[in-house]
Image (tube, rainbow over all chains, first blue to last red; front, side):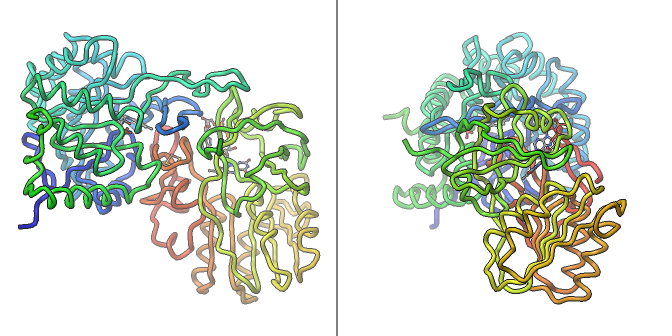
Amino acid sequence: MEPSIATSIGQIQLDKPVMLASGILGISLDVFNRLYASGAGAVVTKSLSTAPWEGYPNPTIFSVKGGGWINAVGLSNPGASNFAKMIEPNQDVPIIVSLVGSVPEDFETMIKEFENCKIKAYELNLSCPHVAKVGLEVGDDPGLVKTIVSTVKKATNVPVIAKVGLGTSNYLNTVSNAVDSGIDAITAINTVRAMAINVETKRPILSNKFGGLSGTPIKPIALRCVYEISSKFDIPIIGCGGVSTWEDAVEFFLAGASAVQLGSAIGDNWVGVFDDINRGILEYMKKNNYSTIKDMVGLAKKS
Amino acid sequence: MQRNHNHPTIVTIEKVIDETPTVRTLVFSDDVMPNVLPGQFAMVWIPGVNELPMSIMISKESGKAAFTVRKHGPSSTGLFNVPVGGQIGIRGPYGNSFDIKEGKLLLVGGGTGLVPMMRLLTFVKPTDDITVLMGAKSKDEVFFEDLSNELLKNNPHQVIVSTDDGSYGEKGFVTDLVEKLVNDTHYDAVYVCGPEIMMYKTVQFANSRKIFVQASLERMMKCGVGICGSCCVGEDLVCKDGTVFDGEHLSKNSEFGHLHRNKAGILENY
Ligand SMILES: Cc1cc2nc3c(=O)[nH]c(=O)nc-3n(C[C@H](O)[C@H](O)[C@H](O)COP(=O)(O)OP(=O)(O)OC[C@H]3O[C@@H](n4cnc5c(N)ncnc54)[C@H](O)[C@@H]3O)c2cc1C
Ligand SMILES: Cc1cc2nc3c(=O)[nH]c(=O)nc-3n(C[C@H](O)[C@H](O)[C@H](O)COP(=O)(O)O)c2cc1C
Ligand code: FES
């Protein structure tokens, strides 16, 4: 029998295991449709806030020599309410709505906006490394993580994912607090705080000075995090960070992830990257006689 | 080491040409930018100010390229004010380019939308019959008329200027002239770059007469490489799928000519 690349992350069922990561190409339903048609298993929206945000001035992105990007887009987004109206007509695309806020009430308010939208899950951004008062600053506060996750879990029946990253405190504590408060899955990791300086103008390049590093340079770090989380917790994991080939995706499955997300690879390989990776995973499964993605998940921990 | 086109290269402004009271051309030396295709753009870093998408302008001197900028808000004014000797960062080139057809061609440019048209003129064959139609608000704001005539000196050609207030050339909007021209003459191709309403009407006129037409679109750009999503028009990403789109494709895009996104990504009417 032909193997199946369908996967499940707890209650979340997907036909394909490679999703679009949050913040990439994510402000138009037409674009979501296109990415879904290009082979994305799901699309995660830009992180949405209660009010619209313009983000930082340019330069907001920098390409690292040898691979990878540093971005400080500053979570620019049209706000949850405007965004919810845009995706209301959606029927087909598995959409995961990413939310960012500073207090539990922010998340409650935003979830009300999406009541009429057909969505697969919420992803809580507890890990943006370059915007004050949200993201990592929330993820680094154990009490806040607990109250936000339990508030969100009470406010919706849709599965809730927490996206964690590397802040000042041990990210495993954030995972632990989220798991204790009833989170359904974990996405690991977000970008890693970084910077770039131009030697001729002798200035930081990004207008915000600091940004988040993504792409191939962070893959080994992300892989380590997925392996650590899956070793310590019984929770479904989505691997994110530097996925650009089918081998990268399989590495994350072997480390314990049930699905992966990618963003930066789109900047290098454009939207064909989803189908390329799906095809490679399928070939690998055939060669190894795996019938489902689950057959691979966490195998590296057994050896 | 080989140049990474996504990495900003620092160049020094060597010459500043005042085209009109509000438009300037800044000339610099570079290995890559003088040889790009018409329609391609660069992301231009003005240190301490911003980074903006700019079409890449031709220069008369070999090994040199330029940007022609209109001072508008703080960012473009920042670029406008870069002096000779000032440094800017450039990355790119990005985007696709116009399909260069042969025969009787109509090029329509409004304001700094003329920049890609000037580069397109350097690609035409001596046998092509070219009409350049340029629009400006008033006599003061007309530029590139002499340059167009010079670039076309070996071609059968005409350069038509229209001003909104009639202070120079034909009076009225460029689009009225486009309608008249495509009704009276058969063109093998129409190319347009300028304000979106002008492009929208030009594409409509050409489409209705089944003439091949391409437009080079502008949208808010942050990354230029197809990651951030800020430049989307419907399902198309201007930085990656464009900037140049066929008229037929655009006729199916419900946002073109009607809606664009602001810095937060909220759709706004034109
Ligand atoms: C492909 C392309 C080619 C262009 N070529 C030219 C050209 O040759 N000459 C020319 O004068 N203009 C060109 N523009 C327009 C130019 O990029 C600016 O939009 C314009 O100069 C207005 O800037 P501003 O001073 O009003 O910005 P501001 O008033 O300073 O606006 C503030 C903010 O808006 C941002 N912003 C405004 N417009 C844009 C945009 N389109 N993309 C990204 N950020 C934007 C700035 O980064 C800044 O954050 C081009 C635009 C595109 C997309
Ligand atoms: C331009 C850009 C914008 C991003 N915006 C967000 C965001 O809004 N929310 C979020 O949780 N992560 C955001 N991220 C992080 C990505 O979702 C992802 O975690 C990270 O890029 C690592 O994956 P990659 O190496 O495949 O790009 C952004 C990344 C980039 C490059
Ligand atoms: S400018 Fe970022 S996707 Fe086009």
